[in-house]
Every structure is written in structure tokens, then in C-alpha cells.
Amino acid sequence: MNPATKTTSNRAAWIGFGLMAIAVVWVGQMQSWSLALTIVNYGVIAAIMSLGLNMQWGYAGLFNVGVMGFAALGGLATVLVAMPPTTEAWRVGGMGMVTALLMALVTTLAAILAYRLTRPGKIRRFLLAAIIVGGLLASRYFFDPAVELIEAVNPSKTGYLGGAGLPILLSWAVGGCLAAAAAWLIGKITLGLRADYLAIATLGISEIVLSVLRYEEWLARGVNNVNGLPRPVPYEIDIQQSDWGISWAQYFGVTVQDFASVFVKLCYFGLSVTVLLVVFWLAQIALKSPWGRMMRAIRDNETAAEAMGKDVKARHLQVFVIGSAVIGIAGAMMVTLDGQFTPNSYNPLRFTFLIWVMVIVGGSGNNLGAILGGFLIWFFWVQAEPIGLWLMQTLTAGMSAESALRVHLLDSAAHMRLMVMGLILLLALRFRPRGLLPETRQQRHT
Image 1 (cartoon, rainbow, N blue to C red):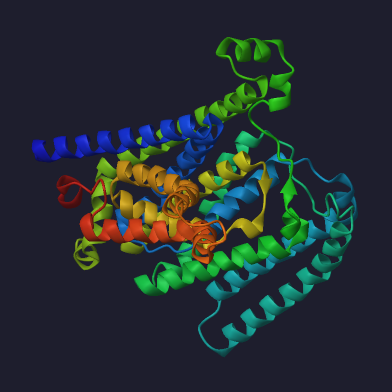
Image 2: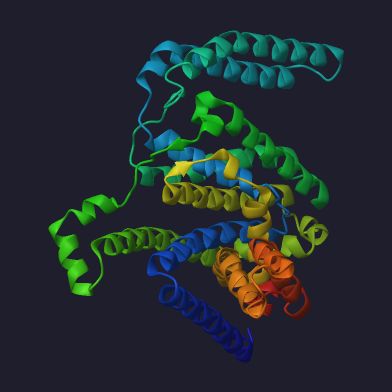
């Protein structure tokens, strides 16, 4: 790498993160430190998601539009791991659900075995159809009654099987594994498709995942949501009632309520930034390794890579699984921070479009750029509305309170968020088409 290019890149990174730090301090001073830390915590999680997508797009050129599906699977893991089991639901319908699952597994294995042992032709097609239809009917025979019994158990509070009652931090790893397993299955089906077809397929499959989470109440209460998830950090009320919490609040000259809120958010920050640093370190090692150079070579010219004997589809599957696992971890972290699992909150605008904007604006192929893009875009996503309201109030300060134009402009401030996101993306594509921290020449051509 040219030393001048490296110096310029490092200077741009320092400037970018320095400006973000100033912006966070500004929010803390002008609004509240609790809000500033909330923005930082969600910004860390957004940066992790951006890193996961950057591995897929920046390393390998995979156009994954199913980000929200993998994030939702990570969120589901928090419910399955951390929530206590619903004993009554397991008693009345657990055995039926397990039996239905075993029937589905036996059907899958039988279909695979039949496919491998029979020759292509009518006999194979007839045998596969018979196995699949028979297995489906047998599985539904146990599944449907079990679902009705489970969902009837105190539906206002439970109505689902619950989880394993384990520490919620374990769900972060499980969320990554669950997303990785789904990505492996999806990748085996879709990674042979052309880029535009891959985008359509991943978007469609993510919608299927979300539909299952919304309507299968026995799994995670569906649209009824799962509230009261355990926390890996202390509760504010416990800090407010502790002697040390009161002492520290008096020492800093703030109310004990404000101190407890800030302390809890700092604890979340410590956990999430640790995950971010570990993921970033591993991503950098992978990027600079022979495997990373091979992935970029495949991205730049698949035909030449295949001619050199590289298994392009297998490598694409590897990076697709790894990137999806990182997104799954971030999805579990976000639900942990929210304290609830709400399937209806997973929409393409927030979990797909926004993450793509982070990668594009930050600089695809550059891990540090993906992190900067994550913080930057999330900051403006949160602050666009209050800044827009302030701007409209300033512009209309000289108008009468009854002015129709003034009322319209103030009401329009709520929609500033979408306009700001579009404007940022437009300016980035016009003036910084390779992102704020573009991929270096050495990374591209090594």
C-alpha cells in the first residue's frame, strides 16, 4: 500500500470518528446523556450488523436483501434461550410438538435417501412425492392439535412453549448459530443464482421467516410479543435503592434516577463494544488473510477465479454463512437491549435498507468504514426528526401561530428522517461513490 494512501485513510478515519464523538457529546449536552448513550448503544449494534453485511457484499459481492430475516432469527434466540419454559404448555402439547418435529426430520432424511438411491425418472418422482406428502400429513396430524393446546395456555401472558431459562448472554452466540444455520440452508438453494435473482430470493425467504415468527404463536407469541426478557445488567430500581448508587449520584451531583439510567446504559455499552471489537478484529484478520484475498479475487472476476480452480459457490456459501451469523448476533443484542421481542418491528426500511446505506456510505469492503457508516447513519436516523423540528421552528419563527404554512411545515418535520436518509445517500454516491473510508488499493488488488 502506498504510505501516503494509508496516511490519508487513517486521517479520514480519525476525523470521521472524532466528529461522531463530538456529535454524541453535543446530544448529551443539549438533550440528555441518557439519550446520547442510547444512540451509542444502538449505533454499536448497527455497526456490527453493517460489518456482517460488509463481509457478504464488500468481500464477495453477494447482494443479500434478507438482512431483517437473519436479525429476526437472532432476536428469536433470546426468547428460546433466556425466557423460562412454560411448564403447562409443555405438559399439554410438548410431546405432540416434539413428535411432529421428529416426523418432519424422518421425512427429510427419507426423501434424501430416496433421491440418492433411485435413478432419475418417474419412479423417483413418484417416490419423492409419496414420501413428502405422507410425511407432511403425518407431521400435521401431531402438530395441529399440539399448537391448539399450547396457544390455549394462558394466552394473555404465555400461550407458547417458552425458552430454556438460561443466561441471556448465551443467546447472543445462539443467535449467531441460528442465523448461520438458516444462511447455510438458504445459501445451498440460492447462491447459484445471478445477483438480481439472489436479491429477490433472499428478500422472499426473509419474509417467510418473519411470517412464521408473526403467526406461529406457539413459538414466540407471534404479534402478541414477548416482554420482560431477562437482562445481563442491573435493573435501575435496584441501583436507585442501593447505598452505592445513592452515594455515586450525590458525588456527581445528579439525581439517583439519572445516575441509574446512565450506569445501566454504560454497562450495555461495555458488553456491546466488546463484541464489536472482537468481530472487527476477526474480520480484519480474515480480510488480510489468503482467504480474504481469494474472496476479493472471486468478487472481482468469478470467471478467472473458476479458471484457477477455485470453488466459487463453496466460498460464497462460507462468507454468506459468516456474515449472516454476525447479523444474527447483532439481532440478539438488539432484542436484549430492547427487553422485548416484537416481530412486527422488523421492517425492510430499518433492517435492510438502513444497513445497506451504512455499508455504502461507510465504504464497502472496508471494515472500519462499515463501522463508521453504522454510527453515522444511525445517529442521523435518530436525530433527523428533532433536528428537522428545530429547523422548521426556526424557519417559521416569524409566522403567526395560525398560519397554515407554519402548521404544515411543523407537521412535516416528522417525515424529515426519510428525506435526510435519501439526501445522505445521494450526496455520498455523488461525491464519495466509494464511501467515506473506501477500500484501499492493496485490499482490492492483492
